[in-house]
Length: 72
Image (cartoon, rainbow, N blue to C red; front, side, top):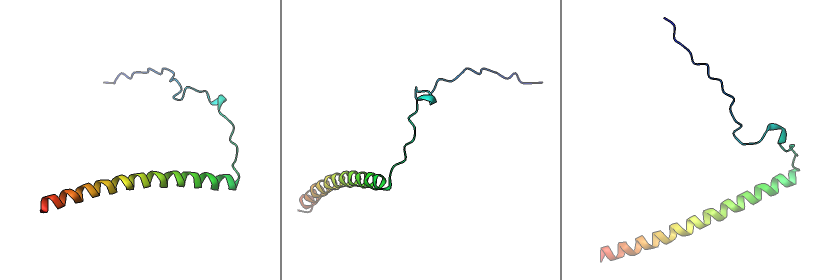
């Protein structure tokens, strides 16, 4: 007994919608550009974390006030 194999080999469309021939050439960055890019990314990350921290502090204050009400 042999199993019938399906041989449906349809061409797959490109996932990104662009051909590989339309890619931009790789341009190496200077060490200064790399460091400046890292600094920008870190500043953005720190700003997001500060916003999260302030939201957590507000929640903590609300919970502390609720605790005072419950203990009274």
